[in-house]
Length: 252
Ligand SMILES: Nc1nc2c(c(=O)[nH]1)N[C@H]1C(S)=C(S)[C@@H](COP(=O)(O)O)O[C@H]1N2
Ligand SMILES: [Mo]
Image (cartoon, rainbow, N blue to C red; front, top):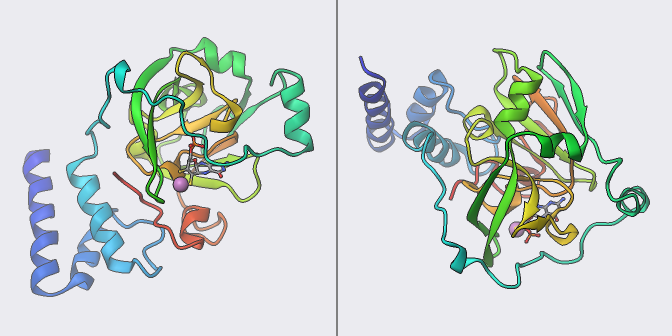
């Protein structure tokens, strides 16, 4: 059977079972095909599973909308006061020369990348929309190295299923599955609107995940961990967001 007709069959199956014999049967089908989000046990339950499963089957390769330059918001929105502590202030005073992005977990070559190293890799710029779950949004041009490139350099092992990313800001960490991690628009962003990424918007380094809500674009990232399971991270729900009542998968 072709990949497409197989997908169609699974999706139809999900929809039919959801209607006919309830969400539990749909969830069982989803589990068989690896379509269960890590926070399926929370209050979203089977509903979140269906959303995630349908998205993964139908929009795995779709692109976030890109805008013309004339649509860039001016000034770009900065969400409250930028994070600052002693360590961050010291790094900032040194022009972030000491900033490192550690890559570990299920990779052949664990590494710690400086900003200069990341900037030496092929870059991508894209004008996309960042939408906060609270209702505001803005459009900006983001520049960075595709996460997929850095994962290639590190050499992900075949068992890899998720990439966990962690901020220097306490409490901020999240994860994406490999479909989003390897997606061409998922960037390790160091630039915005032609300049360095402002600290207010997560500079010097942030993950930019334009196919999901703003909270998945974690600012000030210092670590990527490749893993086959999210059970051992935090409360095992895939990120800090579901612990606070937000869905792990926040596709837009
Ligand atoms: N480290 C860190 N990352 C974060 C946040 C934060 O407070 N700290 N806020 C998130 C939320 S809820 C949104 S909507 C976006 C806001 O991005 P902006 O500051 O560029 O507007 O960043 C996300 N990433
Ligand atoms: Mo947000």
